[in-house]
Image 1 (tube, protein in one colour):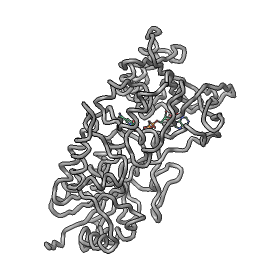
Image 2: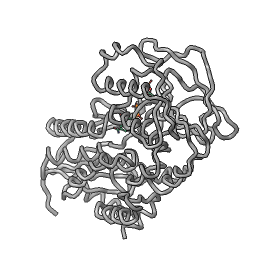
Image 3: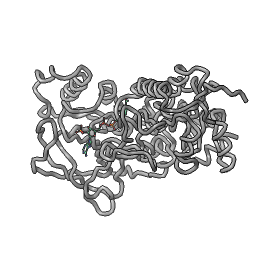
Image 4: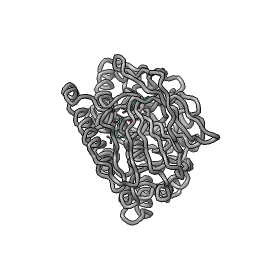
Length: 441
Ligand code: NAP
C-alpha cells in the first residue's frame, strides 16, 4: 500500500447534502492527499435528498448526480449500513481518522409539547414525510386518511410539502417517486380540508415563494386565505424580497373567488395549538388565538376547537445526540463553535446550525468546515499525518463482521429501484433495510 506522510483521513458521518458537499470540499482542498470515508446508518446514500425532499420535487433530488461524481472518485468512498455508536464508536473513529465530521442532519421531530400529542393519527413531519418517502423507520406508519380534516401545524416549507402531497391527485403524483404504500393510501384518502396552522401572522411565515406558489396551481385543491388576516399592503415594504413575494402570494390567494374545488387548503394565522382531544385517536385540536408581542406569539386566552382527523406537526427537527459528543439541548444540535466541537471532531449542515436553509446552504457550510480542518492541520491541532484511516476501519469491520454496503452496491440497489418503478415514475424505493441489502445481489 502506498504510504504518504502527508495523507490525511477524514470520516464524514452522514451521506446527505452536508456530507457530500463536505467530501467535495475535502477533495478540492487536499486533492490526492486525502481519503474520505462517508458513513451512513442506511445502506443507501443521500439522506434528506432521498427521504426528506418531497417526492414531487424531482428536480431538487437531481442534485444527487453531483454527489455521485464525488462518490465515484477513488479518494471518497461510501460506507453504508454502519451506525456510529453501535458498530463503531466515536473514540475508535477518532483514533483512525484525522477528522471526524458529523453530518448527521436533524432526523427527529421537535416536540410539540401539548397534551394529547400521544393520541393516534398525530404525527411529526419526520415520520409523515418519512412514510410517503419510504424511509424504512416509518414505512409502517399507516396514517388513517379516512377523515375529512387534516391539520398541519407550522408555516414552513415542510408544512407546505405535507399539505401539497395530501392535496395532490394521483395524476399529479404519478411522475413522483412517492412510494407505493403512500400513493395507494392517498388515492383512497377522504381528506377535503387541510388547515395549515400558524402561531404567528402572514409576515412571519417561513414559506419560500416558489414552494408557496405551487399551492395555487393544484388540480383539485385551492388555497384559502382570509383577507382580514393580512396586514396593510404598505407594511410589506419592510419585508426582505423573498418574504415579500410569499406574502404577495398570500394576497393573491385571498383574492381567489370561492372555487368549487374538492380540497380546500386553509391558512389559519395567529392560532397556536394548545391541546389535542379524542378517544384514542385525535378528533379535535384546541387552539388559542395569539397576538404578536415583540415579534413573538402570545396567547390571548381566546380558545376554540377545530375538527382534526389527522394532525401532522411540521415545527422543525432535532439532531440525534451521540454519546460523548457535547450537545446543545435547547437548540437540538451539537454544541459547537462554527463547526468545531472537540479537537478532531466537527459538525456541518443541520447538525451544526439546526434545521434551516435550503439544500444549497450546505455547500458553503461544507467548504467552511474543510477550511477549519485545513487550518487545524496547519496549526498542528490535529497532530502528525499518521492515522490509519480506511485500512484501519476495514480491519475493525472485518473483526466485527460488519456488512458494509459500498457505493457500487448502491448502484445495483438503485438499478433495482428504477426497474421496479410504476409507469412514469423514476423509481420505486425499497422501504425495508434487508430488502435494500439483498438487492445489491
Ligand atoms: P421552519 O422553516 O423552521 O418552519 C417551522 C414552522 O413551525 C414555523 O412556522 C414555526 O413558527 C412553527 N413552529 C415551531 N414551533 C412551533 C410550535 N411549538 N407551535 C406551533 N408552531 C411552531 O421548518 P421546516 O418547515 O421544518 O423546514 C426546515 C428547513 O427545511 C427550512 O429551512 C426549510 O426552508 C427547508 N425546506 C426547504 C424545502 C424546499 O426548499 N423546497 C422543503 C422543505 C424544507 P414560528 O416561526 O412562530 O416559530
